[in-house]
Length: 393
Image (cartoon, rainbow, N blue to C red; front, side):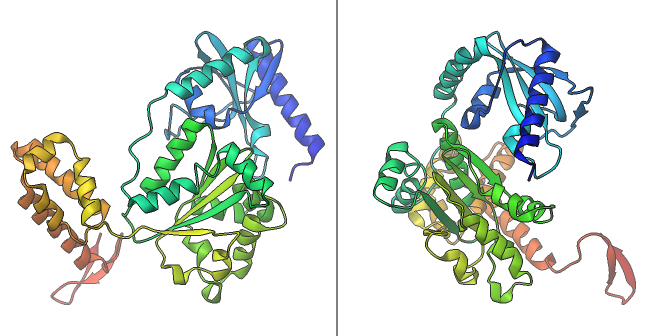
């Protein structure tokens, strides 16, 4: 890790250079944390500013409203007449994030900007509908995430000697609501001002291959205040160590999650498509995973709830929704939503809501996938019916 003195010098250099470039006499650096999306969503992006005559633009278009469009440099923003700067100078993957990627505003505008962002947060668009879950699962999910992070609850937990962190594992086959549940929690955290961090398998692999993998992985598990860290599809990290090729890799993962360092005010949410019995018992022990929530295929009641959320025109065009509920037995949420998508596409083409066509088309698509799943992907040689070799793509 970067030595503290070097870290401070780097940060002061970036702060001074950015402030000087825009003529800001008394700059204040800040990290908006859970308020960042509300701040940027209500701001206008302005000019880029080089740092030490260096500006590296980034052509990536992912989340253009929130991403600064650069890898090294600064960018000016304005909101309600207040000007602030986003500094981004991540030299390598192990630099402490908030020292090299931060915001700057003039001290005279700091308090007013803070008040504005609080207004933006309260009046931002409401979060989407809660995920379609049984009342018991939904209540348990909320209590162990959003309610757990409530400052009063956290204080009471610590006062009583409880563990001020929580680990949840969401399991079940693909397409049954794990991602929707995480998306809803993320939206709620943004509204409540809780910090969030999303870690993909690629993020984990990148951390493990750095110069200091233990420190880099530990950073993935860290939050600066209260927050939720989402680990999506971490099957490689959660597999059983008896069958793993790299036990050291898992040791680093487990140590970062629940090692000597104390983690407080954080909820870890892991999602996996693996059966629970294939996950390392060391990972599942209390203190690492405190709760396993299953996400099976929806029963009749949940399928009915999902259909009730469809657009009124779709529901009116289909007529007998109970027939649709019965006809989607053993379907996942994702499969049912694909049927709706086929209905809409058919309606745009013919002006009719044709459930029988959508159901037949869906079955055809799934059959095609099932019969071709063992064929090569990309270019390769296969034998045709005459025994000759041909190119497949």
